[in-house]
Image (cartoon, rainbow, N blue to C red; front, side):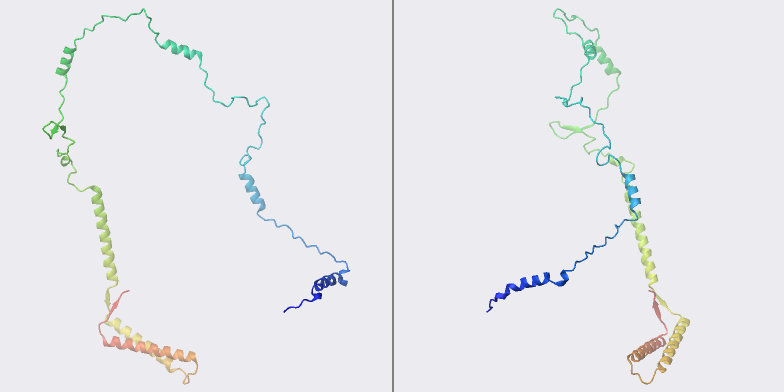
Amino acid sequence: MSMYHPQGLLRPRMTALCAQESIYNLLPRVEEKPVKLPRYISTFRPSVKHEIEESRAPWKTMGPAKIEVPSPKNFLQKRSKEPKLLQRKQDEGRKRMLTIPPVPHVTDHPLMGIQSKKNFMNTNAANVIMGVAKKPQPICVDRRQGDKYLLETSGLVPKYINKKDYGLTPTYVIKRNEEVKKAQEEYDAYVKETLRQKAMKRLSDEERESLLQGLKKNWEEVHHEFQGLSVEIDTLPKKIHKQRLETQMKQLEHDINTIEKHKIIYIANK
């Protein structure tokens, strides 16, 4: 259980008074003004300013630089913005009235009794006799009622078999077949070349003997290095080196025995 102490409220006040009444506070303090660093100015400022001035136009964003002030006499009038019709010229109206025939008068009568002396029967007969006879279009009738239609558009006339290219392979099909054939030939050639490169190659007797002598020479070099090791192997690097030499000697012995055992050897080309 916490107890209330009467001096608990006086402690902060005493601390503040002691801080203000210190002897060091009686001496005048010199205010240290912060040193202001010089303003940074980029070295590219002149070039950027010159480029902006070249690409700037006086009326690009805020309109023209100088505009004429409207005159007070040209004030806005009523109905001044409404569309106005073009005024009709009097000369055009007069010309149009002259071109239109006048309206007949009530007392005017049309001419009566005018007849043509042309014999239309003889004229028509002469045109038929002297004219070239028209070739009738072939038609097809498919019902007893006489329903007929043109024979050419009916599909019954063998029209397409009379064409020059009827039954021939189209040009685009021939071209496509040639492209497919060429692609197949290139693929077959690629497969043959790949198989030829990966085919087994037989070693000749000279190559086999040269390979065998080379392996024996390598074994002698590794064995000579192995014989030169120290008798006491007490460190890790020495143990690793000894194991590596033993592994190389075992692999060389295995290869030598394999080549001596088989007289015919094939090598795959990778």
